[in-house]
Image 1 (tube, rainbow, N blue to C red):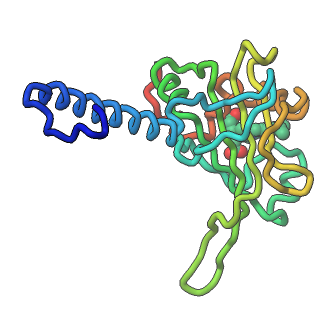
Image 2 (cartoon, rainbow, N blue to C red; image 1 turned 180 degrees about the horizontal axis):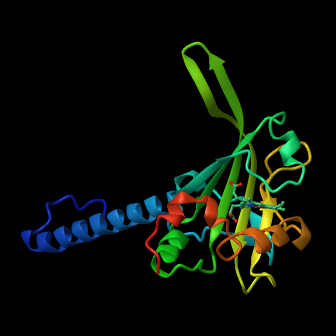
Length: 206
Ligand code: HEC
């Protein structure tokens, strides 16, 4: 249409332009679904790597499945002596939803499983009318990832805290002796401490 031509369009084009409008609307709707999906991380794997083994800090994990929380729980030969004097920490554990569903169905953790361990300081109240402990500040973030193609041991373990206690954007796996060995020896299900996660224990047994 030229700029000079401002005559009304003939009736006959109307159905075509209506069709166009409908397809534009459909396209816009589809784009919105895609955008929402990526905003909630639905189209991304839970573990995103840079190169072979550098894990980017997982995002959105507080919207994953929360499997349990422990207070001051650890394997430590000294713990009998120090338990009462050490200030205890809460450990909150999350699993990515896709892996949760697969575990619920098969009893196995699939490749791509990510567990997050978020550590919070505890504050204890003992005053008249208010008793007990609650989570105060988030102080550390760790992850375990299962990927048998990427890691010789199947699982790798990461921390997203630097020496100054600041949050890092990416992390490389710990050596075996730092994390894997204890998980290998003491965890109930495929290196995962399901014995401490009531949400996973409560799933119907296969
Ligand atoms: C001496 C034993 C021991 C060592 C060493 C250890 N862990 Fe764990 N880990 C545990 C226990 C016990 C739990 C159970 C969860 C809790 O504490 O609430 C756990 C749970 C976890 C979880 C949650 C998923 C799961 O596997 O159950 C992550 C993630 C994790 N540890 C990361 C690490 C990292 C990273 C390291 C090395 C820096 C590490 N762990 C070293 C004992 C250990």
